[in-house]
Length: 191
Image 1 (cartoon, one colour):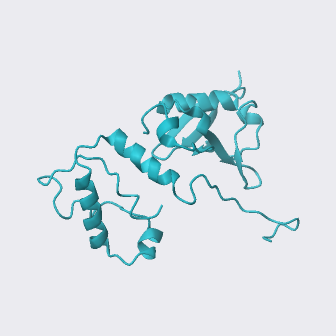
Image 2: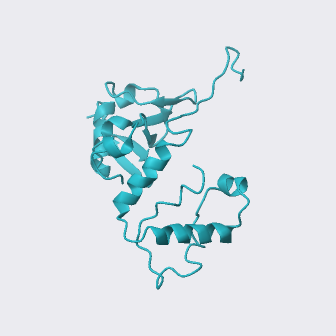
Image 3: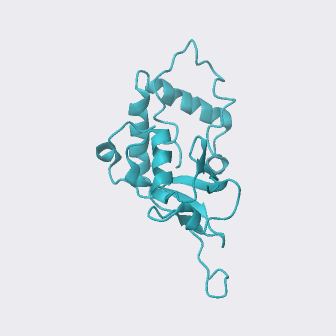
């Protein structure tokens, strides 16, 4: 009997581990991933891997996982990524959704309470990426103060509604739906 292959799939908030048979297709692995995370909008996503030449490649659903040029590691490494981006998230999403400032912080869910959320409650959190902090002339304390105000403004908003609002903002950003990749000329150097 053929020996199972160990697979690790990294999502935005988890690492999933599976043991798949050598005959498992890309679709079977993908279906197992989306079932595990409970996703219904499967057509927007795919599994990405680094091939033996160090290029990022999409897993082909109609071929066996073991016959694709996945970098030989144990476990095999895949990343769960958005492959297609909906044009209007508020109309195209069928389930509740599981940048540059100030938009990343604005649609915080409305669980704000002055008794619980006192000054400093955000200090231990990584609020924004370092590159965003460097782009704007605000201190961490000033960012925290702004985020706290936005959090309070959204008092009573359901978490799901806050996520949809965040996605609406994201879809209007200039780089929404853009994936970068390196290109090289025939000599293997950058043009």
